[in-house]
Length: 76
Image (tube, rainbow, N blue to C red; front, side, top):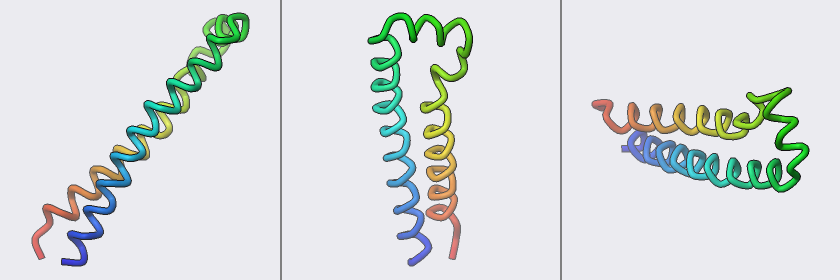
């Protein structure tokens, strides 16, 4: 039972990280393209940094979500 509750916590944290990734990426893109010169320079010189916050947080959230699902579905 304790493992299933811990899995539920992992799933909730994973979903929170994924939602946070979308929110932070929207704010990051707003910052970059709000300052047009910096946004265009980032597209030309460092295009991977445009999506970096999303990839980082989405990867962590997916790992937590997968671990939580494995904990919930595991038989005691």
